[in-house]
Amino acid sequence: MTWLILLITGFLVGLLVISTGGGGAAIYLGLLTTVFHLAPGSAAATSLFTAFPSLLVGAYGHYRTGQIHFKVGNQMLIAAIPATIVGALISPDIPIKLYTWLVAIILFLLGVQILVKRFSHRQSKPVHHQGLQAACYGVLSGLMVGVAGLSGGGPIIAGLLVLGLDMIPAAATSAYVLVGTTLIGLIFHMSANNVNWSIGISLMIGAMLGAFCAPRLLMHADPQKLNAYLKPFMGVLIIFMALKMVF
Image 1 (cartoon, rainbow, N blue to C red):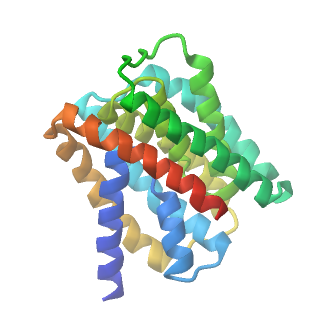
Image 2: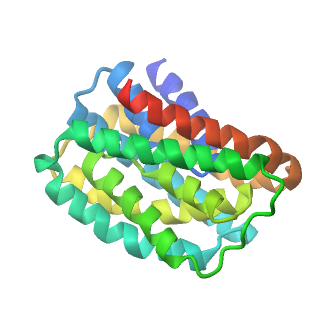
């Protein structure tokens, strides 16, 4: 029965995170530590192991539907991968409290910016000549993966929305970027043999099924309604994530 619960949980999380542009590792990390009582090191490795295949499936599905913006995605990815490696190498020496507060403040400001842009009557700026901003979001995401074992989806999806992408292409491009960062983070965190295979495999299978369905469901959604509801939802969610990190 436990494997069925894990399968359903993985499916729901995979469906949600691929639809909203996250990686899911933060959600899995919370579930693994609070519900399944795994040690932090094991939970971090297992969460990345669970999230990576579903991201791969989701990103391929978005690629098939033509929603990935490769230019801005590659700008983020090029900056994120070295940051992931550096974060993994220096993570033992970084005070977790300091790191947590820095990330929380940045996520809070990004969430507020998304809400301001959503409810402002001014048109969003197109994604042109903003490579430096994209790289900054990529670096922050990479550090989150390398240091804490998270997928780093918060800064990526927030950055893409701030840079002017609508919800569906932002979710698609985020999934593409997170495939690269999560793979690097997984390699480093798996080196300590911390993955809980019995829990991780069941969650992973469910998450892959959810990720397979998400891009196809999004293609049948009304883009205007999706932006109207999901953009403010993502802004509030990112602010909530920031507050949850420090309180």
